[in-house]
Image (tube, rainbow, N blue to C red; front, side, top):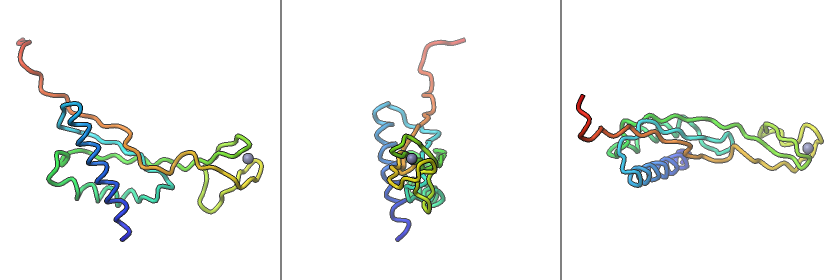
Length: 125
Ligand SMILES: [Zn+2]
């Protein structure tokens, strides 16, 4: 049950990659960088193993997946931003508990590097 979340995210990621490849007329994505928020509920290891498994039979079998864990940042009404921990959701400056998480809740495709297409024709040395 627990891995379902990661697997559906990996499916979304593969869909996004396929779309990007089509749009740009490129097929070999060599490196994919994904930001995984600390509070996203996603286990990076499970995401990786899901990627290894679900990309089989797709155009991304040789793509390197790089996960970047994004720390959870909270913003307080007083303007202070700070690293939040699940257990301690209080502004360290004014002790206000109404903290809004502004970063670290999402899983985001941050960049894709495509292999340069083979040079076509021309330019003999
Ligand atoms: Zn505050």
